[in-house]
Image (cartoon, rainbow, N blue to C red; front, side):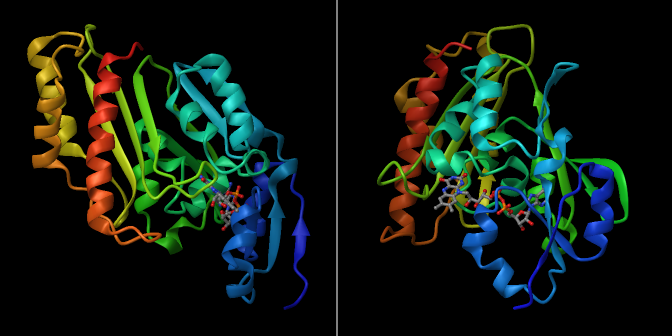
Length: 291
Ligand SMILES: Cc1cc2nc3c(=O)[nH]c(=O)nc-3n(C[C@H](O)[C@H](O)[C@H](O)COP(=O)(O)OP(=O)(O)OC[C@H]3O[C@@H](n4cnc5c(N)ncnc54)[C@H](O)[C@@H]3O)c2cc1C
């Protein structure tokens, strides 16, 4: 393998020229090293863009009712920034348990969104928060925006963009996060993210349930979301007393769509059962919790 050149831009505007030449970004480097991508695609990779010198990518802002997180922020930095503003945020709950301390200090938001491994602790919360992904392309430094779901569904060849930030509404919501692991430092076999907003207030209730690690990598349990919204809308209550364990079990037994492949000595059927048990537990807890 030929030696790869490394480039150190200081401004986002410099990135398109490097992309045009066939260079790829380096966030935390944890996926680049582990995936063997540099070995597999060595011929097509013309160089590495080290993004750590681009200050803008480390920005954290609360602006116009939205939270903006630069793509160069590590999981660790994200936990600190978001945790100060919204300690109960699902992002903080999810990233605090991801990987190890050392890895959380390297893994970046941009690198995680771009690589989206099936064990991601970031993808579920971003979809649950209806976050937007901002990016530029090799053809232009003009910033474009797409929903996280839109980004995750993009064909791989169109995903060769440079992510600059993610942003989501800074509104109060209840949340619950679960990662299914055997030991704390393990890749989750699946994760569940639940966010509920607008309960008991004058706004319309919004419920989002996202499961990752499924066949097809992730999905939203839209039918269960809609049933819960319907109950909340009819009763205009705070939700706590409306959702008994048996009602939730019935909803999940009839409407759950998550299906799994066999993983780490565990059958797909077992994972489906495990997800239904944890989802019921999560919904019970989130309805009892405070904003
Ligand atoms: C042992 C181990 C355990 C792990 N456990 C977990 C876990 O439990 N939960 C979890 O969520 N993650 C976990 N991870 C991290 C996960 O697997 C990925 O390695 C990580 O998300 C990649 O982020 P990065 O910043 O290191 O990306 P990099 O490795 O730098 O890059 C990954 C890909 O994204 C591209 N890229 C980088 N930055 C950008 C950008 N701004 N725009 C566009 N493309 C970009 C790169 O060119 C590359 O193709 C673990 C990693 C390891 C090594």
